[in-house]
Length: 319
Image (cartoon, rainbow, N blue to C red; front, side, top):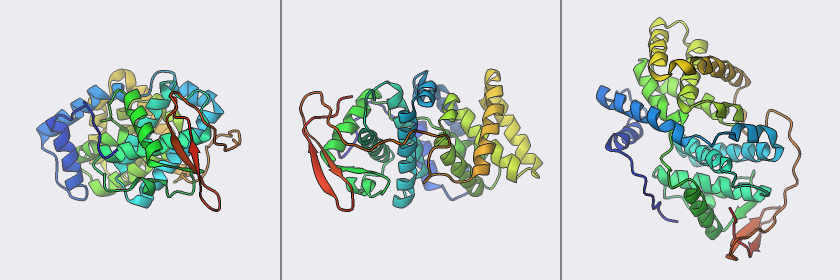
């Protein structure tokens, strides 16, 4: 799939904001106040529409297979992004797709390899949506964490299934969406603070407990955690951040910020944790490849061992 045929269109303000971030990622250039306010308003208005369906956190916490599969998918996404030099935004967008898709109850009786295919599709679609289209699909699979590799036809099929299931609403609002806006407003060294907060948020992606919070709450909590830990001597920064909390977070969400900050502090103390396993015990799952179908089209799967060998699945992906 060379491009995304999507009915969802960015507003001029959103296009300007994304372009601004890409062009000035390492510079101290400030977004104009009017665009800043409009971007923040749109993110806050839209974020609920890009959250997983209600009950998803309970599903993840109660199903050991889903817990393990999600962790492996997020871990794969982060490590692939680092290896390929993709933007941080792609990681958060891909994980958002993953969580929203699973929350739609589309993965009943799935096997491990099906989640691997889904995680690859989430990453390729997120890369295309964020303008990274020059990579060959096989580049996304050069990760030893995957037990299987997939033919382009299988990935394309899953990409279409993913986008259809999500209603072609791919312009996700994620915690990362807020970082540059908030960091700009608190008038601190944006590059340094943004990098620290992004690393913290990447670690938080691995923990499904953060799924109970809205994206804005997660973002403001991560920034507050870093500010309190490393920049507590700066009264101006703390004051600016406190004002932003009142602006961004409604009164009924204030307790969630306190709870989320405490959880962020625990994540911060643990350090980078992708590459390991889930923090809670999970069942060791046997990796197998099975076929499952809806209409009889082909999904090609290539099993990895010491040498790659191709497996052709005669049945298609039934979601």
